[in-house]
Image 1 (cartoon, rainbow, N blue to C red):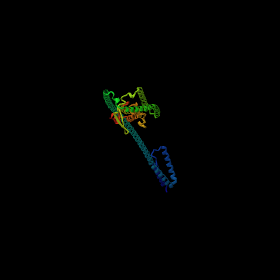
Image 2 (image 1 turned 60 degrees about the vertical axis):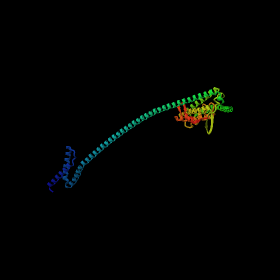
Image 3 (image 1 turned 135 degrees about the horizontal axis):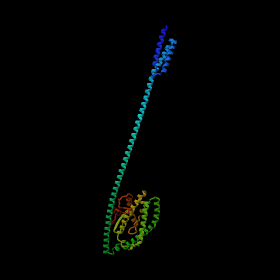
Length: 388
C-alpha cells in the first residue's frame, strides 16, 4: 500500500472518530480546556493509528459505538427520571388533596353531629317544658277537682247534719210531748223482772269495762315499743292520740258519777231490733244511738289510721294490725249495749275508714282530716236497724 493511501485511510479514521466524538458529546457545552484536551487526544489517537495500522480500527469503532449508544440512552434515563419525579409530585399532590378532602369531610361530619346534638337538646328541653306545662295543668285540674269534691262533701255533711238535727229535734219534741202526756210512762215500760235483768246485764258490763280499762295501759306500753322498733312514726302519733283521747273519755265518764238506775232512758222499752251472725237482738232508742256512734267513731279512727300507715309506707298488717281496731272501745261508756256489740260495729266502721284513709278516697264517707263521717247509706246498711 502506498503512503498516499495510508494517509487517506488515517484521515478517514480520524474523521470518523471525530464525528463519533461529536455525537457522544453531552448536551451541556464544553469549556475551551476540554476542547483542547480532546483535540490533543484525537491527535494522539491519530498518531497511534498511524503506528498500529489496520488492526486497531475495529476496536475503536466498537468502543465508539458503545459510547454512542450510552449517549443515546442518557437522555432517556434523564427523561424517565424526570417522569418519575413528576409522577411522585403528582401522587404527593393527590395524597395531599385527598387528605384535605377527608379533613373537610370530617369537619363537616363533626359540625353536623354537633348541630344534631343541639337539635336533640332543644327537643329535650322543649319536651321538658311541655311535660312541666302538662304537670302544672294536671295539678291545677286536680286542685279544682279536689275543691269541687270538698265542696260536695261539705254540702253532704251540712245536709246530713241538718237532717240529723231535724230528726233529733223531732225526736225531742215527740219525747217531750210523750213525757208531758204520760209522766211515768218510761218507768212503767218494763216490768220489775225486766228491770232486774237489765241491772244484772249492766253490772256485768261495768265489771268487764273496768277490767278492760286496767289492762289498756299495759297493752299500750307493748304497742308503743313495737311501733318504735318498726319506725312507724305517723302510726305512733295516731295511736298515742287515740290512747290519750280514750283516757280522757274514761275520766269524763267517771267524773259524772252517772247512776243508770236514776236514768229513765235506761229502762225504756226496746223499740229496735237487728241481726248479726245469725242472731237477733233488741235495743231501745239509746242503744241504737250507741251503735250508730260506734260505727261513726270507727270510721273516723280507721280513716286516721289508714292515713298514718300510708305516710309510713306500711303495707304489712293493714287495719287488723292497728291497736285502735283491736281495742274497739273508743267512745264506749258501758251503758245501753254490750261491749262486744259496740266493738263489732266500731270495727265495721274502722275497716271502711281505714281503706278510705289509706287510699285517699271517699268511698264510704265524706270530709277530710279529723272532720270525716261515714255516709248515711253505709251506716244504715251496716246496722240494718228495724223498728218494732
